[in-house]
Length: 282
Figure (tube, rainbow, N blue to C red):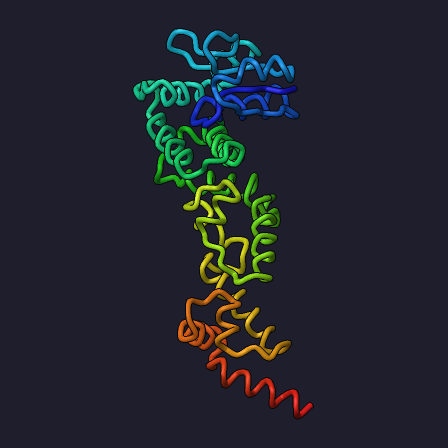
């Protein structure tokens, strides 16, 4: 079944998809579109709109859409009721509804600022609400001195991190292809250019990059690729070191020399001579 709502979700529009997928419609497809296109798109593709004025699944009085889902689908679960109070308080700025509401609001305001892709945000939000449900069902009576944090972290690890540790996001494949394409030019790609092409927030890309690219920052990885290309050109061509510096995207030869020595421990001229000597000896 398809469910559709406004884009740029924060609290209720993450909580409701979590509830749908976990308790109502496990195979649900969640769609985010601009506010003005929700109704027309819903009619066009046969989706159920939610968290929107004038539709069935929406706010009523001081209750939010999450509350209506619980009522509509008669979900009787004390843990969900506890979550509903927290979500309602965070989503309606009534932080007096539950002590945890302020924390939930702060978390999702920060996440929505850092992550501009709605479905990436939803994926992380699913993990947050899984942890919140575990707390609401098993840990709500525990105090900080009884270490509920460890239980929540282990739950997040087992549900999300452990099961997805080998699964890299789709953007990593696109970025690797983009960088590979650059190896045929002068490796001039920047973090901003990459984030623009991938439609990803540059701060998010910078933060996540090292997880999937040899534990190196974006700049370090690009410099590594430039040096690898330089070594390849030394082996397969008669270009001068100045020409190689240009072809691998360095601003000048002195910059090339400095980075090359930092990466490989030798100046490029010394490295090339040793390489040529090794070829003669073989």
